[in-house]
Amino acid sequence: VIENGYRPTHGHTDLESRIPTSDRPFNIGFAGRLVPVKRVETVIKTAKLLIDAYPELDFHFYIYGDGPLRSKLEELNSSMRTDRIVTFMGHSDRLDEELNKLDAMILTSEHEGLPMILLEAMSEGIPVIAPAVGGIPSLLENGKYGRLIYSNEHTEYADAIHDLYINPIERTRLADSARMHVTNNYSATATANAYYEIYKKYCPGI
Image 1 (cartoon, rainbow, N blue to C red):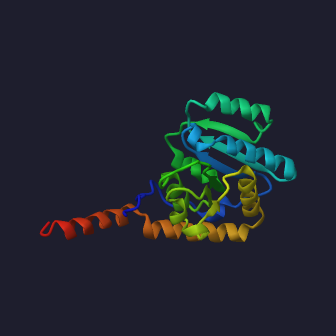
Image 2 (tube, rainbow, N blue to C red; image 1 turned 90 degrees about the horizontal axis):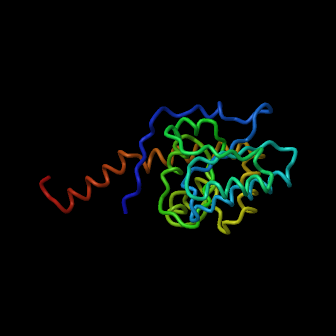
Image 3 (cartoon, one colour; image 1 turned 30 degrees about the horizontal axis):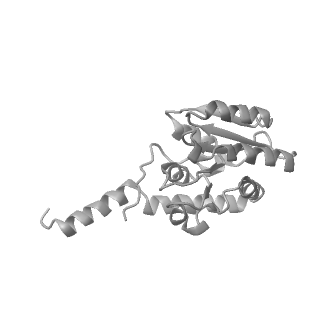
């Protein structure tokens, strides 16, 4: 198995610059197509639970991407009165720049392979919260490099976000270790070398 490789498009962001302060919210991002398999409604339900359970805390969700479910999801966002903390950003050609303002990245898909958005976020030192499906448990080494969600329920996502919010030391440790993990094992260079070794093995003399 040769894993996906990721080449950062710019230098790493200083993690110290992303520490939440009293004058800005804890920003959580989601990026993906707005289609049923991505279960984006879970993001909105997670936001609603956090508003109700922790009204004193300041969270904001940014949903990047577009798709056929956007209008229904925006209606749900309005009906659940989460539109003040959930913003639909649409498609972005410069998502790498948008990542700089995030404190966490969540994925809520019903199934996945190995999502590039997780590699991108981890490479930038952004803690990730993702379902234990497809290649994600392997990427996160069963929770060592990110928070795994086993039930894929909004309650579990809310608990994981709150835990990261109230534990800045753990959040920084997770961000640092995830960044190193992706750099060492999922770089474009590592992927290219893996392909080269296979060609050398089966095509001698190249």
